[in-house]
Length: 319
Length: 319
Image 1 (cartoon, each protein chain N blue to C red):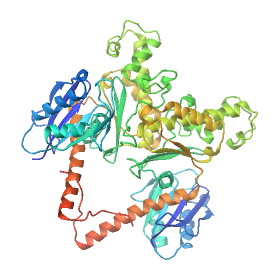
Image 2: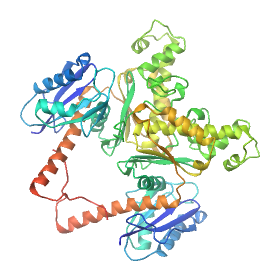
Image 3: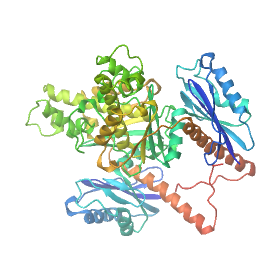
Image 4: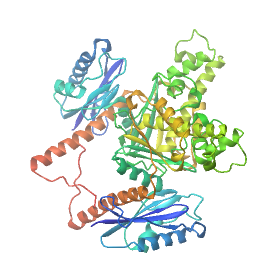
């Protein structure tokens, strides 16, 4: 039995599981808090300890889904989220591999999540928009995430949104989708439009059915996200677009805004493309990271076998 | 010497050339007018005749870059441009292959152009925006065009543009990039803002330096295109984004609007990504279509060889 030990390292918790070849999670998911303030070395140590506690027969490799911008080739964290002290520059793959004693493959958490959704929906081409505090996501093309020239592929929150005109995005630019459709953005719009200054979280807006500004903020956020999803579907033509993250549970009028705007954006050639709301949890990123590791570990093992046998790498194609 | 006979079928002309393995075009490009009004059968016949006139030693396959939405697997035109009568449903690959007596591979003209640009810029990941009467393009990921679930990948003109608020797009939707940044869109904005009703082509706007509305229309079109290009670069992280088509020669103030807006949209992780203006002609689509045919013809030939020898298809990866 071939098993991948998978960990998902977020700003607040580390989740881990043993993932079988069929995507089964064996004994289920274990979680520990991320020692974010203690710095990157402590986070690595906690991850190794958690994975060690799961060791069993048939373990082939480690898969890590990590917050931040990640170099999937070298397994190094390139760009950090502010939530883990000293995260940028961490040689995550190398350190966890040495600690656990197995080869390790690292992928960004957005792309791990996108790969997991592709498994879940049986899709080869998929757009995943993850709307929480910020907006991220993943573009899956031909079963692989679009990683990009600087490992920055999947920053889907930084495109033009009509509803964000003049609003400053957390990235520093003006008018991006994230500035109006993320948790941060919906709350910012609410306050900019004269909402109750006593409201300090997006969550509170959901419980104010009589507050018209709150209802409008949710509708506007949904509408902006729906138009962006539609534009991505027009450009990419995926089998399905999935909206996930905490905002995906915002209910009406957010969902009404989302769906109306999405439908009104699609060109005829892709008009039937389904938009799904996902409430997927850590199991999705763990399965996606394991899939990534399984593919790359298999390819690396194949190369080593061929070299050892002195065999030629037979490739298709190219006249 | 392995040669691909390549044809680019547009609404007004058919261009063709013999493309060598190194991308060389041999004796150069020959062109005939597209008999668009005579219908699809006449267009196929004209294409076969043109390719026949180029036949020479070493011809391996035919490559076709075609207007409209194309099924690259079956070689059939799925969605037509209005410019060729009866184009939708044409079994283009099959008919041209039978006429010329060589295997034929068909790809949409946007993606043929994108592949040609990828060769030209030596890029594996590239975003191509083609702005002419409309706006199309191509997303090249890992050296391959994003074809999509309905062969509709590359419709880059149908995303949100701030400057297009309330303007109707040729696709029927409201607020799309094409509604303000295409040749059609720039002229529509000019007229909507009180421009001279006697001006009937976008080309004329370039020769009116004293017409403030004309200058503003060009600047707004450039600005909308630059923001869209920036959003795509944030999402995809390509090595380069290329703007091509007749609008790419619009000069200032269009280019000033384009570059300012592009730079102002990029997130830090991709801030250095170059935006190139291209004046590439039919040679680019011909080279791109030939590359597509060469890859797929090579792969098909490899499969046939393996089957004939009873060999196994050795693949990498997968534990």
